[in-house]
Every structure is written in C-alpha cells, then in structure tokens.
Length: 252
Image 1 (spheres, rainbow, N blue to C red):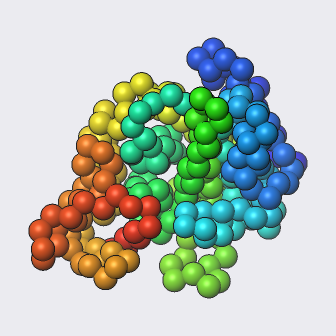
Image 2 (image 1 turned 90 degrees about the vertical axis):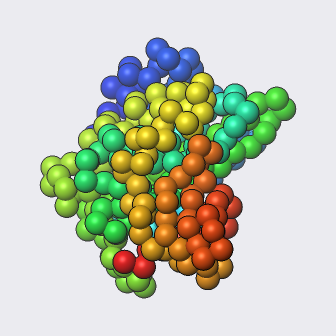
Image 3 (image 1 turned 120 degrees about the vertical axis):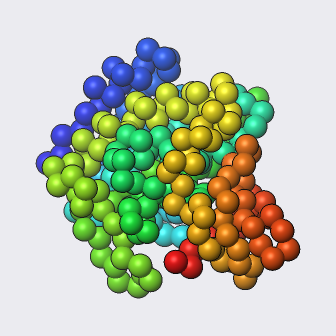
C-alpha cells in the first residue's frame, strides 16, 4: 500500500494558495479529465489530484498515456487552479523545467513538453484550460515513469526514474515535485516565460541538434525564444515553431 505525503504537500502549499487541497484516488479515467469535468461543473478551487491508476490517461495530441499495471509504477497527477495572466506562451516549458529541477540534474527537456533521460522519454506534461465566466481554470497534468516500462509498440523504449535513484518511489517523487511546481506556476503567472528562459537553455535536449519537423522540414534546433517558441535554422532561414500540432524529433 502506498503512503502519499498529502498532508506535507498541503502544509507546504496552502499558505500561498488559499483553498488548496490534495486528493488521492485509487483509480480514475484521467486526472486531467476529472479536473476538467469538475471545473465545467463550477468547481474552480485549487487542487492536486493524484491517481494510483488511470484507465484512460491522455498525452499531447490525443495520444494515450500508459498507466502502470500496479500502483506506483507511474506517478500520475494533475494540478488544477485558476490563473490570471495575459500571456500563456511557455507555460508547458516552465512546468517541465520545474519537474526536472525537482527530480535530477541528468534530466533534459524536449520541446515542447517531454522530460528526457538520455534521449528516452521519462515524463510527459499535458496542459488544458477552460473559461468559466471570468475565471480561466488551468489543469496541468504530469505523468512520470517510476519503474521499468513496457516498450511494446514504441519506437524507443521509455526511461524511468529509478534508473537514476532506485529508492525514489512515486510518493517520494510527488513530494519532491508538487510544492516547487505550484511556486513555479505562480511565478509564471506573475512574470511570464522570460525569467525561465536561461534555465531552460541549460536543460534543452534539442539545442544544436539536427531535427525534422512533422511537415518534413529539416534544420538545426537553436533553442527557444522569449515566447517559448522553438527556433529551427532551416535552408529557408530561421523558423519559429509555436503550433501545438508540430512534432519534433532529433536526427542524431
């Protein structure tokens, strides 16, 4: 049986996020889906929702996020909270940066929202928003592989956190990540993406590498700009990639 640090996380977060709660469910279709349902029903309080198992986990572009066969094999949680800001560009990058800073110095970020260990995906991020009257409610979903993952049907085998630290369980990983994530999201709300940009550059898995875009265009990744857009130097010049429909893969 997993012992989740719900009280410790609440104590760390509640003073700067009034009304904050932590909830752990044994099973749900998707933590993101559940919080979006609640928001559309008028429940807009800040909450950290953790699921020991997901039956219909989701990733970017409608992809499936695989839950573990047993609780604790994958850490899946969503942070839901109302945010007031005019510029949203770069939020997923700031979230990814917060996660890698909390977990391990060997982790890198693949634009726009994957956490990599040695060019293998260890964690993913999915951000969704909804507008309820004058309130913009944001749901930040995070999935982190904790133990070895099944690579069936995948072009590249996934990475897992216990490769780096065999003693790091799902509850311990959550305790490392949760409070700093709330602080970083609040910082983003106040200051936007720009203050995060230098730290992102130090963790950028694609910078200086040849990449191929999903439209077939090739070029060299040149980091991200002040809006969080990916910069790719192509034969036609420097191209800014900001569409959520563009995927990027390195050639080397």
